Amino acid sequence: MFKQIKEGKRVNVALQNGTNFTLIVIKINSIQGFIQGVTDDGHMIIINIKKIDSISFPSIPLPIPTYREIAIPVPQPAGLTGLPSNIYFQLHKNFTAAQEQRIKDAINGVLFQWFTHQNEKWAGGTNTGVSQLAACANTYATKNLRPIWYRFEVPNGKAAINLAMDQFIRLIKDNGFRHSPPAKIDPRSLTTIYAPTASTPFRVSLSFQVNPKQLDNPGLNITLLGGSMFHAWLHRAGFNDPKLTSYFIAEAPMCIMRGFQPKNPATPDSFYIQFFD
Image 1 (cartoon, rainbow, N blue to C red):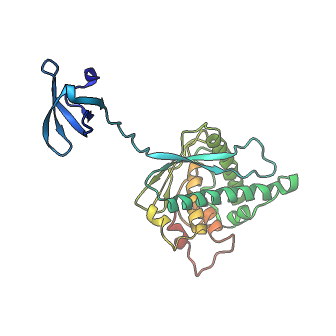
Image 2 (image 1 turned 180 degrees about the vertical axis):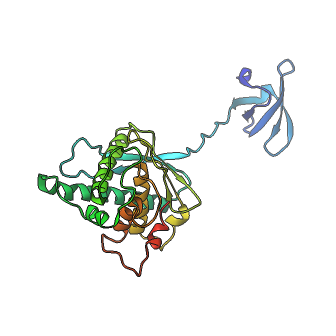
Image 3 (image 1 turned 90 degrees about the vertical axis):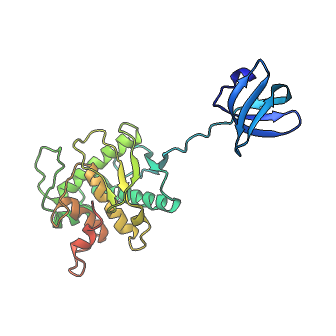
């Protein structure tokens, strides 16, 4: 057993008299039969090899993983087939359990809006219905109606929502069937939720960053947080800023945040836009 001991290594030593300790080996003299080392409490000792009962090596603790996977169930709208059962995210270890739940709630909120839109558009099989989301966006969104990768004109807010929700299908499938890069959820110190604008419709990761302080903010209810997450997903679908009145990437999530109600001058657009990035 002594052949495995190397100078500079840390070893557990059990003596025949029942004494146990850990030391860092400084010198090994196999001819004279002793080991010299320093114990954990700083004492220099010399041990006669004949008095050693056994030697073992301390196990090296495995590093705590930076991420762990969470799964979010995918609702199944009428008229759509071939969807995955779940989408998956790599959640950073620094988020608390309560913050994790808020993140899950926000993602579920986006999936619910997508699911509801698809069902309302399906309209019993006609696929010609107009969802509440599409009707609201059609009223207020007039600018930046197409993703940056889309080559054709998009005439109005209704068409922009239909296009965005169809791109969500692709995002969901690519994630759920592991075709896109892993979707990482990282903490950030600014704003609420950030995701860059995707330049392609294919195999786009659903990665985003979220401010833990905002997750802990009691004034940020799930409707507002869900709208912020929806805005981030629109970026991953290829829609671009600015975050201003009349621009699709602002108006569509604001529709959700207002519960599809008409705008009220008492609550300016800037109140909602502060949660976009």
